[in-house]
Length: 104
Image (cartoon, rainbow, N blue to C red; front, side, top):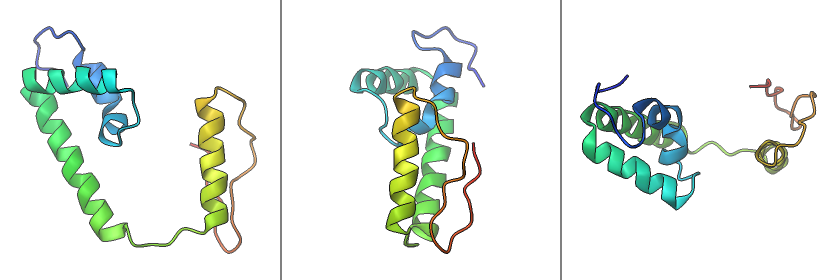
């Protein structure tokens, strides 16, 4: 999706990292770039609003499930390895009584 207009931050970059923006998992400087882009680009702003609404709906409908603490720790450990650029083990992340999490 693109509005066809030139922007300092390209529409494809904004849309590729939209969930990082929604989850505030990016540096403040990047968040500022995205906010400026949304002020200039109504198609991206519309997509942002839609994804934000979906995220709120999922949280409201599914946000009450308890996650086993050991599973959460294992998943967070893998995320940290990925962020650090380290090799992630090929084995599945599991917790007692749960099904394996497939590699993304």
